Length: 554
Image (cartoon, rainbow, N blue to C red; front, side, top):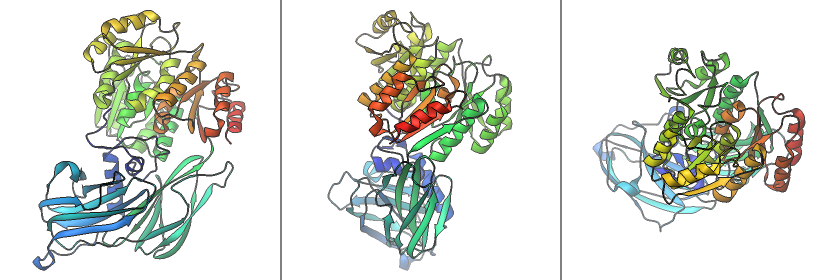
């Protein structure tokens, strides 16, 4: 699976790469380097760096950065050069818990010294970033050789945090929605930031600062810096167990509110949105993995025009790019014109003569980006199984290929033939929705391919079994789970992006009460549960169902 040229797979690297947010648990195994660029840009904008005029007397060619770094923290050291060749060498013993890289403030580029050897740096301002990927303190020593334009500041402010006592905290159910951060720092500047806000704290000295909490995961970054820009950053996740309902007056407003929630928790920072028709599921069923690979929300639209709630959300997001799923018969050219008028510069359309051709074209995008060796096979005639499957398809990078009940359509046959690297196929749904003849045909199209099936007696049991499969094979767990009405598609379609962010299952339920099979499954795993998302209003998932879910959170 590949999402970018340079990926960091450790938990703390994932924390760092989320623009200042703590990704819950160890679920975010890989996140794009572009996200750390956002973090460093925000820091440079909020705190202008001090500068010295270059003189021959202040020029140096060697600096050693030697310090201890606490668990789940980042140190950043600012240096400047008029250009030249640099080398970064680790003098400490090999330690997989430490990472470092160089960031160029002027071009927003990152450089991994371990993979490039000598660094040919143009004139500018740079940051050496040191990351501790573990929970314990580590000693590091990096020697940097090169033509610095002035003596780099080796100062690193202290940051001693007494509350919280750990980087990942689960509060008791029913706890206050205000949390106290406290500690001591000798820094010139101290702040605590969330996805949506940053609070400046008086420093140096002892500090206490209350921050508001929402149900679910709350992500905070404590940043202590000196005037040169050198800083220590500590990352925290405060989990307030509970239920978050994302609703609206219609399916379009629900999709907009799901997009808003994604922004609040730190997702969808790519500048791209996915646009799908909201009253027919056919073209949109394969969109979940595409949304994940593009780091984009799925916004639903009417065929002839964008609903007002979606227009307002696009104004807030200010995306540079939109990908429309389906041809002009599904999403008209008028929608394209509206997107352009809203400032969306790049508009792409993934179309095809039918839903199967669209699924194949979406699969091409997903396969090119994620390079998974596995694909999902699901019915293109009904929606529930494909929606349940999107919870595992997105994070693993598996395209969702739609088929007829008894035959593999031509477009999907061509896709399978053209992707010999996809050696595994997971059929989601029982033989009533995807017949065994489809499995036989896939095996004939790809000799030696493994074809498995996730089945169930109905859509609800299939959603449970998809969750079990994800838990057993892909590292999914039930700390967060998402719920949608099982006989309608729009809310689950839009909500797939949130489920993918948390690597959480999408479980289908009946409206008026929690579907019994789903209830039994959750009861068996109640000790693992922290948070639930409900997609849709009480007309889709009733208040009684919400109460039943709330009783399962301990």
